[in-house]
Length: 446
Ligand code: PLP
Image 1 (cartoon, protein in one colour):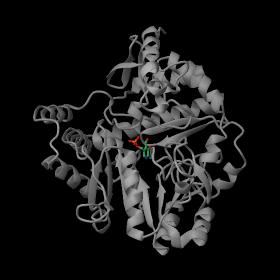
Image 2 (image 1 turned 90 degrees about the vertical axis):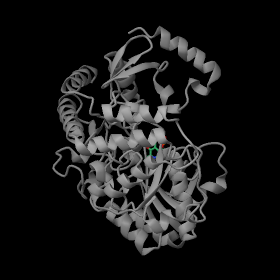
Image 3 (image 1 turned 90 degrees about the horizontal axis):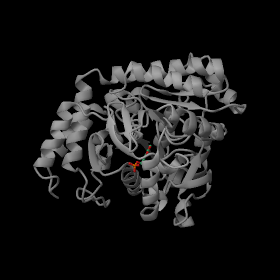
Image 4 (image 1 turned 180 degrees about the vertical axis):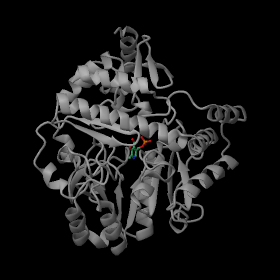
């Protein structure tokens, strides 16, 4: 594959942008990222004309691949022609809010913002204000965007900022526990219950190789928060309107969080985030309440049109059936390949999400965790190899992942997410042929 033009563009980018990119993970392809010229259904074409089956899909916001369904495209075009934004409310914001509140039972009221990060920042502020407490419990390996409260490393109450530039004192208000560890969750409430404002959790860890909750884990978090006067925040930036269809992951797991953060799919491919929940909580945001929240671009009409029409289209067509069917086909095919060629590895994911984890030499803890049973695939014969938390995923062979993914898969025209930890996404634009070609490429690569 020729990458001359991408290499030239990267050289230019390096001299004017830090690391040559505007979001770190994009630079992770070695020795340099390919620059995308255009998308086309389930594919992207790079600046040198190379074509790839795209399973990255913008890292989650694209339900339809790179071709918007006609009603979505028309809605976007007409919004643009009416003038892109106004600094005054528009009807499309109300319609989008009505759509989300109609479909997601725990959401009675919603504030739209511009990114998942903004959503989780505001959710933490709201939880702290509503409870009068400061501490936020997060999961080790969970990701909630580039924000001060959650950029931490370490464990339990011994956490430090994971980035320079964040004062140590900020991390004193964050408690980090392993995902799926009910005892750790109980202990953190025993030790700090009166200071905990909220537990902030992705319903499925989707930035750490895709890790499912074991049965009963979210129920435990729900009970603990309720019993201790804290709030449960589900970060559905990735899972929202992807896992569990229009009811989101919370509908699938039967949990009503107090607050939900959204992003990605609710903007139909344009920058978006949102904080939703019970009215009495969300109305504590200014101007109805006192918790400051504002944004020049929030509820941007073009984004609202793209997001709302995308979700409407999904409600009226076989979008989730198609995506989930192909996802199952991919995971089953990958499982067969892995069993045959690399039995220690793990195929993770659900519905339209998938990932191969290089969990050779799986630590014994996998088996211990298994006793609880997987809420996702209780019948899975390989369940004992299934990672149950961030440490299990991190124990995988990330170097091997590097070689296989950056070398073998990319060179065969398959674009996978840029590190071992980020999820990959199936869209309505993908086809049986894309799945077959991808499986063949994995076979050769593994
Ligand atoms: N929360 C989760 C679960 C995410 O996966 C992400 C981004 O991938 C974010 C929050 C941050 O969203 P954004 O990148 O739009 O700021």
